[in-house]
Length: 126
Ligand SMILES: [Zn+2]
Ligand SMILES: [Zn+2]
Image (cartoon, rainbow, N blue to C red; front, side, top):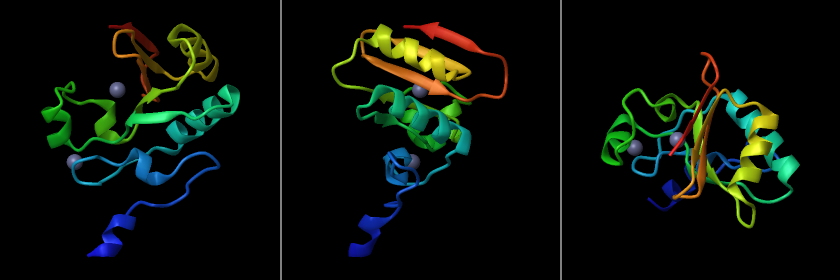
């Protein structure tokens, strides 16, 4: 069915489309408004596109790619992002300004994990 290609193709904020956050395997999605709000804020500060490497993950997909059990990606609270032409340390600084509660710094793979977990702030590096 052709129209299924349009599933989740919904503009949800000035800079993001819902489809960017959907699970790649099944197109299912959960997205917390606070995560979107903070990503939107980050996008405005950066003045350049923020690519969502990974948004929502269904448990099956999360397992497939070796994500941690109970990942915040599986409840719509996390996104892995990539931004072109910006140093990852600099990007980290901007993410800190926006105050995500969880920030993972993935130096080799060149991306940041950002989440809005309700528990205490946590930072890690890989
Ligand atoms: Zn899936
Ligand atoms: Zn992540």
